Image (cartoon, rainbow, N blue to C red; front, side):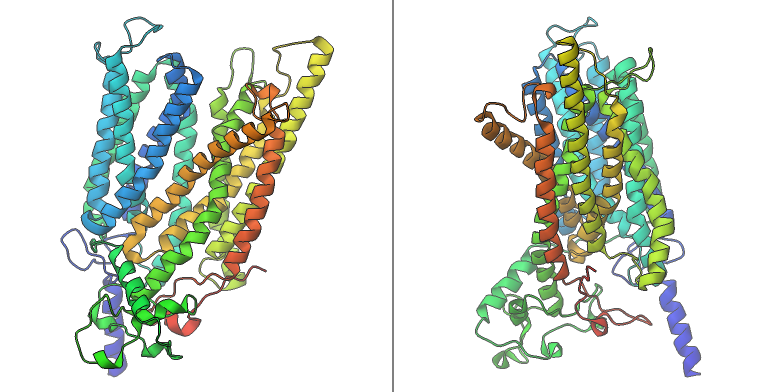
Length: 590
């Protein structure tokens, strides 16, 4: 009888989702009718539409600023950098507000409406006569009102991205219960298919949307993007009954400060050898997940020591913290060195939309006598590489690795990232070799014919480096997304995704800084590596330098990864208690 009773209880447990989430009516979610792939499809759809819009605008923005608004190259590049920088840093604010106060779904919905408002204004700036750049086909001096409307539209899009990007991916991942084995496996696939949708959006944005902008005009392209975004926002709202929601937990930085303060106050105490003596609330008294004690950063464990003189008293969180709060603080501190080593990947990604495009512009872009490939469209090869590799990884490599390693992930998060970092080194080496060959062919042509505008080397020589970049992104960028979602406190997952996005943004700024430093230093020796045009530059040397930087960064990363302590969660039900497995899961880099 007791066994039957236990089976009924387990069956009841499986029927509902007890991970701290609620359904659209604030109740415990029913597993069969909420979350997983049903809900995630709505999330993937709106992400796809937003990324098509973003990549369609970003890929061709510098051309619009120089050709339509008559900005010089320096001013146009500065405006593009300001916009891109704002767009990548705003998520830090949006993610914090969502985790602390608004919740993810309301923030996504509000931000998507702001984004749509930006797209509507961008469309109006192309069609309303008083907002158009001018009344003639070629503008010599665009209207000031058009400049105001155009840039206001761009920064509305940036503002919308600030709340949209960090919350949507974490909201999509929230649809999977980590305490359920089957849903946990599906969640690992979610990040792969998220990037598949993202790369497909990049492919469409960099080809179809750019083509419409060049042939039919920015008005037609903006109208298409506006309609697509509006339809996907409606679909996203319609799916609200299928979602699982997380309630905001207040200021997420305050508990970290409380742990640090409590640990400093008790700095003279000794940590007990038995972690069970540290303070923790019972699992029955909390709706969230509890974390197990780990062996790193033991100083912070002092915050959870119960002082004899305060036994039985009501505890102040500034004097006594739970083990879970202590471990969450450790997670944040552990993230910092991993984030720093990830910046080199951001630098590599930045080359794909800057110097690689300049290489393409200096090569033979003709497919036939009638059709020429836009230089920016060659970046779609990286998206193709990712689109090819992600299904192979998710459907073939992961199942094989699960059987070999016995791990649900197949390949651990940090190992996956390290493979991507290795690809970053290879990309820079291949780029250097291709650029050296292009320069050699150009010099030989000058010796044979004198100064010439003819471009002998086919742009398809760049395809290998873009494909390798795409393969590497399937490991590094997808792994980093998974890492910054999984290894932050549960209450800070939107902030975690914002930290991932900041890798790309800060990497772009570092790339610009490196170009400035290299130009300044090499110019003193007579010939700058970054000249006025690509044929007078030595980008091959710059790429070799980046290969060395990435190689050294990989070594530093491997050193950190071997000593990294993963988040260890107390499991419920029939699952193995996370505290009984290892307490600390160490990254074994064989």
